[in-house]
Length: 487
Image (cartoon, rainbow, N blue to C red):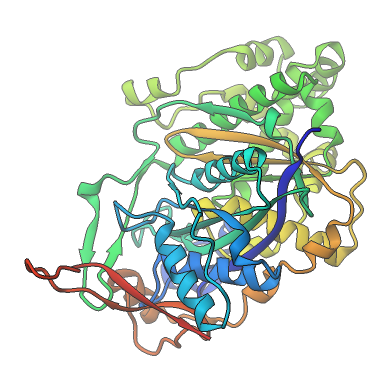
């Protein structure tokens, strides 16, 4: 008998320190209309007593509470992040906090016989951890569950193009056999990867350590915005091609049958652009019927079908744009132009934006959370579906993860019967409350130094209690964080 594995629950944590992007636009002289349409409404920042580990542990503790998980059933605890600050320990740091918090609340600690990996690949680390956990469940003979937590801190230099797309937060997922929300089609997940050099990187030599209160570690990336968009589109197209090959189905027909689509979301507009391109490329692979539909879009845009098909069938070397010193060039110029025309059509609303509507509005309020961006949207989408009384007609859902550098995963899923009971426990909207809108001075100070005057301490969850300073032959703990659980 085939073992069904998938997702049974979500829990979310975002820090209470909120930057209102309309206010940010006033501070910086940026266009609010453009920022609202392309990026969103706000983003969150980690506080002085917070790290990626405290956020991750707080999200997992919420998951355990919300879904009444027996800690002794947890056989896999995975952390997906690109913001970790310890180059030795991984998810065992989170496990240590959980054990203390669970004992503090009168419960047993997490199972001693528990795997604790950390997975890193830009924004895809959480999805890779998810795949590892699902494979663990498919092979595990005992009654075990798995938890994967994606947690990240997105920081960009003030004044850079990435500044409005910052964010911080964590999303924990409960994974089980006979799942209660999503059944994941593990055998047909599509994968793709290709080295991109300067797309988005965090070389250690660029990192800056400032301050002593919390050893503020500002992990600013090297990035090239236009090139990164090209890389995102190209790699997701290849992952989807691999998924279609495994499923042995016609791409555009599959896309039309989907009830919902969730993709990596660095900012509001990007996933819509990528899925629109994916749909158009799907038509190019669908024979006469697909070509006829694609030709209608080409005619509206004043383009020749033959030219568009030739480009879509090409295999551009994206890294060659770097070698030529032309990283602002489009790898698929005709397809990009066609997708812009397609965005203004009635078909776009039905085939693209409608399928990406679940949870889309509330996601405009958390910013870019890197590894946590895709699971956050999935959590927001299923809570939104529950609140709306949404009816999944086919039950088919697609999730596409992406990590700069580059790699992508295309994950076919199915909504299971009775999903509403588990979705009602997600608590996404509740996780956004309470919050403190930062002033300009608070934002700039928190960004640059890791602290600011007048910040209200988090009401509950894990925080950094102290940081070790000893470095001698008898005892050394320099730079090691110690934590406490606030109830």
